[in-house]
Image (cartoon, rainbow, N blue to C red; front, side):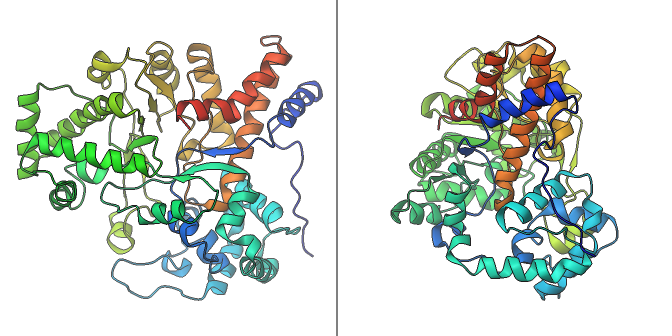
Length: 470
């Protein structure tokens, strides 16, 4: 017997009836606001070509490391899930078989945000009304596969159906941005912008760093042997990204370290890293480049995002066969007060700069990040990120930051996802959790209800639009 799939209208709201009623009222005012997705990793080719998604497995399982990392942890081989290999060795190619295996293991996602997001997609996007399990796997596959063959489920149609006002993808400076150019020239009204992610040309420990920098400078017509030429190449490519709609940069450094060397010292450092850098020199160069990016942001208005503190590809076996971004990235402890001091001494008091800070170390929310953002005009706090993009993570974030940083030193919500169909589900969870938190403040007479309605709108829409200059 199949079990019904139902999305309870009061999910994530407080259990107390009086507080729940306040949460309902707050949520009613924000649930239908347009979606701003100012930072993410969806593929711009989807919106450039508007080609149909090929099948349920390649859309919902193969690219989603939130999903397959959990199955892998329980012994499900990645190749059985169709995850492509670096060397081209055989993996499962039958999407029905992949989907059946996924359904057999769907119970592993119980209690996780992925289960909540996927159930929303199944019910709200595809109209399914029974729970995914082995017995319903092929019903799911046939229903989703048939939908994907229709015009209503092409990328642009879904973009419009989801109420997305703007979505930002993330590209390397080496990207020619052809897909973004195609989107702009197509006449479609959907707003898809890029974001400048310079990690491949600012991290000396990145794979192919020296050749990357050679190509980066050459494409800008600048001298790769010159520190000033290298900086000029950044300005050239930042301008190119601005033409493609970019309003932000993004930096995925191992730490939040910054430095502010004198020009001659920075030039000597650049020469050393181009000759081959040890770990300490690489860290200093990354630190200097955060300050250089902040300096450039004063000129061109690009908002900075810093996503530090991840041990990338912790599993060398998976890395060797399947490559990066395969679910083996693990959070590291964070430190911001000393790390950011050089950059903040230079630019922290300048309201022209917006630096949005993210962390995977929740211990620094109340100890470091909220006090920093509650003082420096240049700093804002990004929402709970990655492993903490969850109901509990969102609650902990509000509990630990609000009393010191307030609401208006945060930037609302961004989904930071590759999983396109989960975007409205993720924003719905964030809106529900923020309304639940605000309802608690109202019930405890810490915030008037009319002000809570204003804050709910700000968290769902206004703060992101202002912070990311959209």
